Image 1 (cartoon, helix red, strand yellow):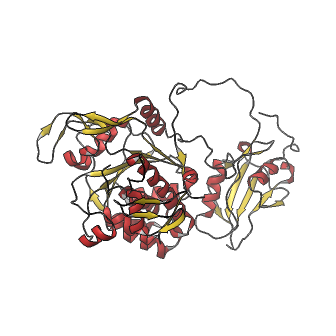
Image 2 (spheres, rainbow, N blue to C red):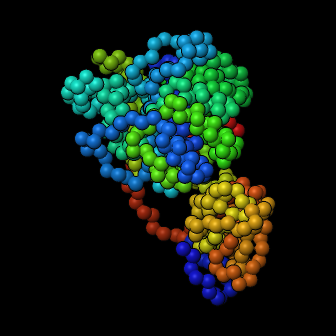
Image 3 (tube, rainbow, N blue to C red):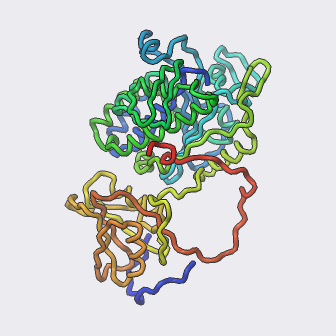
Length: 490
């Protein structure tokens, strides 16, 4: 909390101190997550969503699980369920003929940081060769632990064994489980009005039906499904397809957060209706959980989402009885999951800054106390500005309020003239804001957010010299990841 206002001395400058045709359903899971938890539409909507979601018993209550690590981690799986889609549509429109199977073909881990300001998305190759825990199969037979492809766990023991397999091989605690089928992806993209994708070269895959020109193209649900399923574009096969899926998800997140969908009740209802037709969640995901996540995630953006894939050492690791499998790079995977487990960003870029290079200032933002007021009357704007400033290093109150009137256009900064050096830091962070001297205001500045607010520019003060602290992960391999902004269309 900010200190009590007092009469300080005038301020001085401080001292410097995958089989084919099946990828893509996980994207709908991520959409479901983003839509359901970022809405600020109120408890009634979340209650209705919580009641409408199909449920699945995803956790084996008889087995020990990793201890609660304080973050929220989802396991999103895509199943080959095509129920509700006519056969001719599957074959002629979606290019997804053949028989469905009781299996998962896509797996991804989505972890949300404690403060809700960052998400980490880790794709797991479906053919990963891993340890599968001892379990009781679907017929009731006891099966000892062994090794196999990670996607086989679902067929062996359903959702509970899938969760246990992921937990055992990653060391992560899975808090919630989302299961997506074929129909959800197509209907969700259509409900969003399509999604734009971009490519520097034409992409054509006769197996998936993809025929995409170079440049930017808006795809409907059927076209998007062809894009995320394509695996015959180059020699990268499934690994290249996972990269395209991550690009698509970044674009989808950008569109959902930037188009007003999450603040428009009509659009939001249309999207959630599409999602709920074919999404299942664990029995523990309650309306209270959705409400908590809504509070934490309303400011999530592509720049604050990290995307990566489990590092691999061999994409054609031959195993008797399993054929070609994917072998993880042991050291790289260990480093990745350690970072995820500790809630650390997977990229080394600052999350809150909107400028590529922070503006140099003399007063560090951590020394500046700020109260945020929502002057525009836009739902969630005050909280978003407070979060952006806090992530840029400012000491915000964490409790934004309304300024009254709800008609402010230009963002304004009120400050006590005695803090004339500190306001330079605030001006650098909010370069388009109007500065209003307010004698007697005290040590806490006020930011009145207007409709012109677009974000916070990163600021940095020279650090004070100090002994270098040893890093526990100094010898660990570097984690390779990209933010959603970096992999989405320009």
